[in-house]
Length: 327
Ligand code: SAM
Image (cartoon, rainbow, N blue to C red):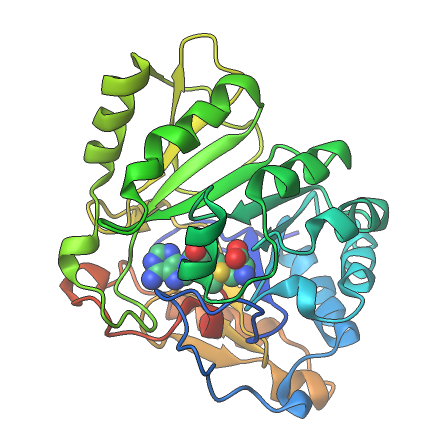
């Protein structure tokens, strides 16, 4: 069995699979309120085709999968895909990124199908503000969603908060407080210059140092560590004294971590993207539908995986939405 290595010697064992470019939210930092030009259904990989990609990549070293989108839970019978991937013996970890709206009804169905864990995106704990950011009133309650996931055994549970100055930065302490009583990992993400950010500006990015110092001022010392045992990402973790969970920061705007990047992405229409930012991608759908082996195309993509992205040179609002590329 060979490892999937890129041209800089990074081992690639983590694939993020976007199953749809559509979403039931219209988060103001991600998607315009009228939506985007959606991919035609015939362009989108079927669950059988995604299973085939995973089956071919697994013997090459793929071990961990994240199902994402768009919003993956709005694609019908998403549990079927979870079951398919669970059937690939080399895959050790299957996670799902979701806005959490459907978790109360779906958490146990997904767990039964073989899902290991979820990340829930939650930018506010205040009902009115959730609607103002997501621009859809779907009754989303982050704490209810996280409890449903926990009850179904989909842990370690991570709550991802995109911090925006003047929008929700006054809630970082409220989010941090959740970790005192719940074994959840609340991660604060710096706003990135992707997608549809009007009328957002660079000043809305809140550096993670500022987030951490606000939490310390309000709730006491944060000690390094306490993060989840299972995870693939670039978060740095801290813990409040006696807390059940932890606080993480993800800092794409103030630090880069490309040197330890272990991931590639499969877009909903079957392109293998080796960097979230920029246009490094190779089409797998055509060879897949032609019945050709995928390995040469995967190796070509990895040979072209950039050493580092150019995100920090972009201004807010410049790049494609994460919902389009499988954030
Ligand atoms: N719908 C799923 C969800 O809500 O987790 C998966 C896709 S969503 C695009 C993935 C994550 O990207 C969410 O946590 C979202 O908040 C984040 N995201 C989208 N646009 C962003 C931006 N401009 N800056 C930082 N994070 C962003």
